[in-house]
Image (cartoon, rainbow, N blue to C red; front, side):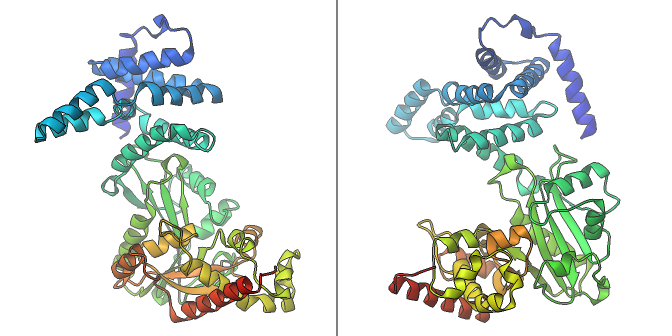
Amino acid sequence: MSFLSDMLAAITERGRSLVDFSSLSQETPTEQTAALCHSLLSSRGEASALATASEILLRYRAMDGGGKLEFFRMLLEDFGPDMKPLVAAVNVFVTSPNERAAETLHRLSEPRRQNLFRMLNQSAQGTAELIRMRAELLALLPDYPELDPVDKDFQHLFRSWFNRGFLELRKIDWRTPAAILERIIRYEAVHEIADWDDLRRRIDPSDRLLYAFFHPRLRDEPLIFVEVALAGEMASSIDSILDPDRTIVPTEKADTAIFYSISDCQPGLRGISFGNFLIKQVVEELRTNLPQLSRFVTLSPVPLFARWLSRHPTEGSDMDALSQPDWWHDGKAASGLEHKLSALAAWYLTGPRDAAGRLPDPVARFHLGNGARLERINWLANTGNAGMASSHGIMVNYLYKLDEIERNHETYASGQPVAASASVRRLAAAGARLLETAHTNGGKS
């Protein structure tokens, strides 16, 4: 890949001698960039095309926020489908539907910006630049939703370019190049890595593993990674995993693999799913290398539970304790809340779905949709500031039972009750009763 990048860079430099970018007659930077985009789509020479693609990306990178907004509007307005020939193709197909007419209709209905993105992707750093470009587009979408068709084109292409067949699984350890290790520290999104010593504790001992997916065009940029703890039982708190003074479990005595952190690394690839492939491939890797492992579970956050609970008040003065700082250090208050919050969390994770049939919690959607079973609710499993603010300290175990994964996935996808252990189902039923009682009585928090 280094050789290919060097070759593309050399061809690009030769192409720059063939194209005079300083002679653009358009007045504004956006108009000049639009002219370059039109030129790229009509170019025939490889060197001049690579040089033009590189110039477009350089000019985009130099734009300020307002310039990038105008760039995306230009993509929306000037590089959609060519409507006149498309309408003509529709009329031909309606009059005489056949394979050739269908192919023509398909070709003309594709927005021209998709081909523009393909040609930009051919430049030496094109893939990384386009990922960054989409990340900046995603930041604009809440305020400029009309740009969504441009994002849909990015998604369409990225799902092909980052197909599972192109991804490479790598084990990350203390011998991994420092540039990649630095990115692992920076990208960890679930349990912050404090420093290099903290990272070493997560990847160097024999009972701690980390695996990441990479793409051939992004050799030193992880796309997603998962951290794994080997143990003799399911973990009920994150402290037991991250404790710097813990006792290392001999590999031969471990029968459980705990996936305790999954982090997406590239904001520009949001919505392009890698996690389900990653977990399944890591399970296969572990089964091959450590055949004594018989249980594969997660220790997962419940990131939106506290926000959901704030909109669903329940009865009982014990709930008032949640408004007190450090309430979990008060044994009486914590004891009074344990069953109620655990029951409500179980209901939240298994019961309510929206109009599209989705559970409200994104982590639950991921694991249950991936075929896992909700195995256990863990009380005060993460008492760090983020854990208490987002989920009142609750974490959960999802169990990946290999002979049930496909059935559980089908059950979830069809809208049936999610796969859960008997203890979780009992808690969820209690949570439903708490909410029903509060609703009947008017509720009070």
